[in-house]
Length: 109
Image (cartoon, rainbow, N blue to C red):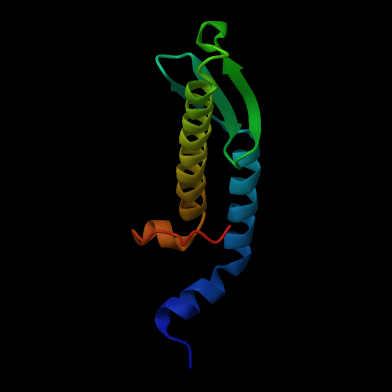
């Protein structure tokens, strides 16, 4: 026998699937941005985590300190990826009854 939450979810499967598909499409076109080092490295990514653009100010390029540039690029990418993951979690939670119940969606997508 199904508990009340299972019954409710079962009755909503079609709408949930449609909402999730719409949310995934929105994530493909949503853009998150990151800027580190006072704006010398910028990263642009879709809400689904696809890297679109990485900009590096030429003033930060120093052949004698490549490690600094590597750290800045890594920080910009990680920050953009975290923003994309948060946006994804927000959109997918809102697309399910879990959001209406104040619950978070597990990171399964």
